[in-house]
Image (cartoon, rainbow, N blue to C red; front, top):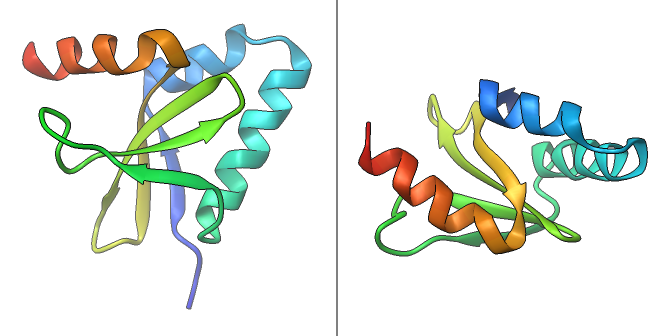
Length: 94
């Protein structure tokens, strides 16, 4: 079976670009591992039902599976202490 394709939202792609080279490489490696079913992943609870998080050091990527698992959509990325509150506010406004 083919690995799912990783898609980054504009926010997640922009966040990756702001990072120093070492954490950016760590996050990219974490995303590649996610595509093959590896990584520190946790399903999120209310109010973020349907989303999961990938933990890579001090950073978190909030994502969901789309197209019957063929795509992993990375919706939001940020430092750990900010990610859940900011993402919850973002989806409330959608």
